[in-house]
Length: 448
Image 1 (cartoon, rainbow, N blue to C red):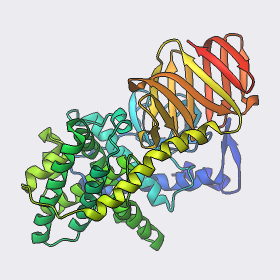
Image 2 (cartoon, rainbow, N blue to C red; image 1 turned 90 degrees about the vertical axis):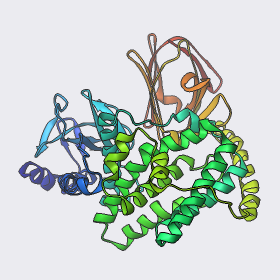
Image 3 (cartoon, helix red, strand yellow; image 1 turned 45 degrees about the horizontal axis):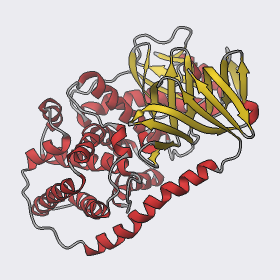
């Protein structure tokens, strides 16, 4: 703690450098709160999720420092800045977004505090608790199925399904304040909605929904419980209402925000199980069932006749059609960007190292627009695009990338012997090329 105090005294005085690392005041704010977060999660984890163990956790700023704790093998050269907290440059490991990444062969939860949407430190650290639960799942709950991101991109945009899904999510929200009698009625309707929608979208996409809920529901429940436990301001309470309640029932159609809605429907099922059954968490993780199947096993619902959903159908028919039209508009906007166009074709399909499925949009069966993250690699070659639009042309599955298109400032491109290089704030490419030609405002490149 003495090390952190000394570091903070300097940091609060303005920008300074540790080794080659530039440190800014925002870094001090999150570093100072890091030990308190570790103490908080150790205090509540048994209440929130009995049996959960904590893996390594990392907080960072893009192009800035990363702070790591709870790691059995910190990076070589990392500086000890506090009790078991190590600092190293974020760029050394290419850590991106709110996710999990292997650092020295240990899966590590991480979050980027340089993002601008946080209303408080608690929101940021609640998200990190969410990611720590994913580390626990992937490390210890081997039978748990995770969703296939490719299924989201081809999920049917059907207005009948959208209408029932909207009604279903409103039922879920009502369940949180329902009497025991009302709860039983709502669960029967919820079950009936799921059966109806399965007939519309088919087993593949019904399983996709369940797999999202199975892994993300518990992690979002952890995030929710952290906020409920530590939120203390009106702004934080407003955030809880918006993030966990309103977003669930806010009308949405097609694939817009689809995966996030299943995070929340999974969370609600966790809340209802916690209200009704003691230590259900261990039983669920050892059951081999999806969360939704486990939920129905415990509550034992039956099929009932649903009310006429005429208003839901009318709205869904209109807005689902608009959502489909958006895909074309987004593609037009992508091709209207400033900068020079880079059109890349790969000789061999590269490894897909990272993407954000919640911010990937399928324009067609073979074209995907990414807005937050795309990482490709092959041997020593790499391509990383973060918080910038990039298009991929895929072969059958999202991870089989054949071509990539993006727009960058012309002065960010270099040709170094047989290496094609792009260095700009949101896009980094270093890849051995087979051919490259510049025609007008476009580089056409064939990469190995």
